[in-house]
Image (tube, rainbow, N blue to C red; front, side, top):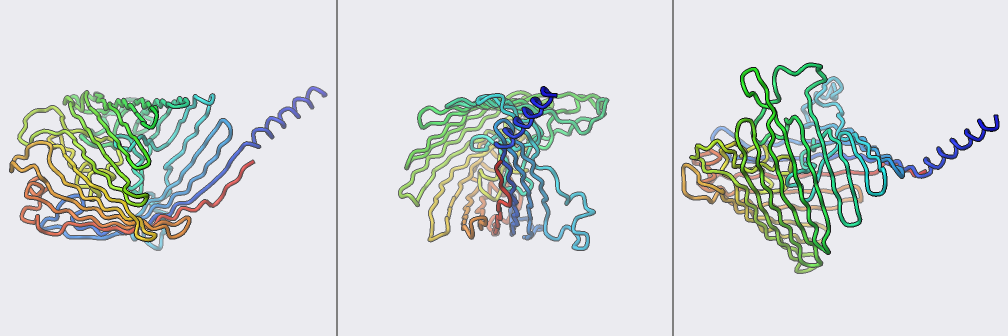
Length: 429
């Protein structure tokens, strides 16, 4: 009996010690965004007109943490205003129900080694290759497992993912569809990301292996792999900032060999604490439109937050411009950041050129896009963001995108977004 009491008190003491270090929190995000699209993503044609809509994200985050374990569950509803009948409220519409955006647990074996498993965003460096895609209302998250090693100045993440359509106990009779540039379908993925700091310079190295199924014969499926590897470096001083990336791609997509690359550099300088300018250039490889080569030479950012690159009107690498014959892209940009009273403003013109030859013209200049963004903090938990973008297309852009004879037609896009993100609960034990 005495031993039983001792064990009971010991167990209660352990429980008490563990609960003492526990933290719980929860927050809500409601993010409606009005958009006016008038040539967004591609040029207007004689049969297309402008449109407008309001998309909305509602997300609820639950967080738990103690000395060893961290857990997060995020439920999300994404809808377009009016798409759900006002009488049903979406209750009977599965496409508008809450889904699991995040559901992961991370356990720390020691101060340096931890493991993370479950549904989770994967976001690294400037998000060119792996990003959370927060601009899209649905975002992007993966079912994955990670091993994380963290030292005083360096970090190594090893990631693994395996996808299946269901839990069938036999091999499916058809493979996952393969389309170059699609990030919606892959069989398995492995990656290693290493980051270290050398004084004020951060350096990262990424190696990613992606497997996709394809039909080798009308009745036989095969998985082929292609690799993305490279480096990202950045420096942030009091006035001067700089970042540089260089990535290559090799392997096979379906039956085709891959040989592609990307490089980019951005140089920023703060003339005053409130006025900053950034000059940038990016090159993404491709091949001539008249090329008959079966080699895939068009660089694919794969799981990047592509809306943040190459102009906000998404003419390139956001669900388009990724055919195997894609000509690649050069993007020269100049971004100005400055405030007017309590509003933070950004102006960013982009000059676009093809990386390779078009079939219809020798002119590689595609056009100029100008992006204007304004951000205003309405309240501690409310931010208002508005933007306007306009594309000034060239004859080469018309030849590439279509809309013949309409290059002088106004192609623009505007949006107003409200981000409401209050913390509703926080507790420590």
